[in-house]
Length: 312
Image (cartoon, rainbow, N blue to C red; front, top):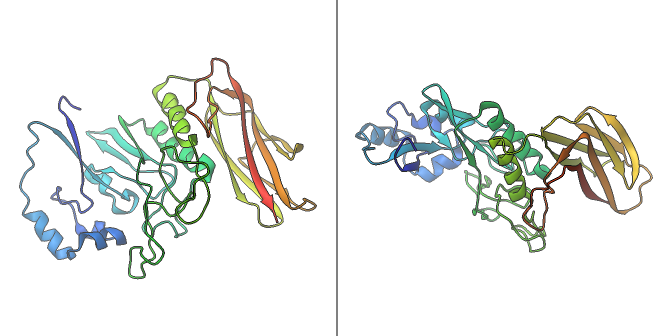
């Protein structure tokens, strides 16, 4: 990178930047707790730091939660931001880095209202739109192989209620394939298989310009517990002409232009039901399989997402 090996150094206390202020890091409770020093001690330590020798390496500094710390304004990259629109780090006037993620938490962790779970890929597509808009040189894919977390009552913060890393299958942010049947972190059953790895492949193909004729669709069942089934969806790629929705094989909406639909549930029997969203006038080359790594199809396929939900 820039003619030398690249080293990325995690520095949430912005110790490497003379204009850094510990106050900005301490806006994030679990940063403050893990640093162990007081704000004054960290600020004093920063002032003592000499210049970094980058003769043999290109060095970039990384923080996290930049939507709150604003460390990207100091040219820091981000491990993960707690925002649907992640920050973009600019250097010399050009977009250099952004970090996309399938789910995220903000200052107060996974249980806070600011967190977004996976939502069936909806969060990942919304996050990735920032990369497509700004076209940075580096797109960081958050994250691989940190499927761990804190037990109940052992989180961060004064009440030990701030949970990071992974909380459950839905409230987690790993991309690597995981079992579809094994027990989850908090008793939930099964994970996402190959889905997010396949979605990553498709997104990167779009980003790199390897394909220009496809649409990716992600559908989230926002609520199925009340009197209505609430669906929301989003796309990346070619914009569909409209959407069609079926419930147990019966059409409940067609010619839809919005990215959501509420379906009355009155009269549905207890048990399993299937809702299907079809994006009209577009195609895809990616099955987004849960069980195996996708092969890119030679011919365009319909853009269809099926979701199962249960009525009690």
